[in-house]
Length: 108
Image (cartoon, rainbow, N blue to C red):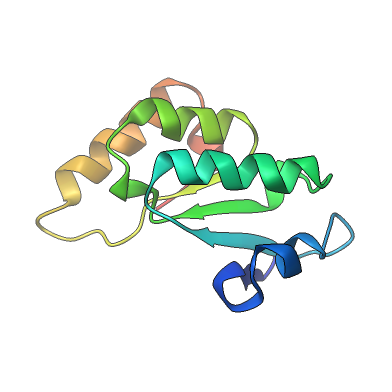
């Protein structure tokens, strides 16, 4: 995967200005699935490929349907912060995405 750009550092507008000509991924930090979907819509409305979008902290969203929606759109779903207390849910998330044929859009 190409180097990622921290959208928190650039701001969404600055990151979107990278457009499809940049090899960088857009790392959007939100644990809320609704916010991730909204950010993805903004990015794609600006003609940035969804494949450049990385939803960081996606494990904070409990609704697997939103994980699927973002991954199916072509974006990356990053499940981080794996530890003894969270491992079971991470496995559920990865298992769900794998069952949907979306493991290729999953980062853990």
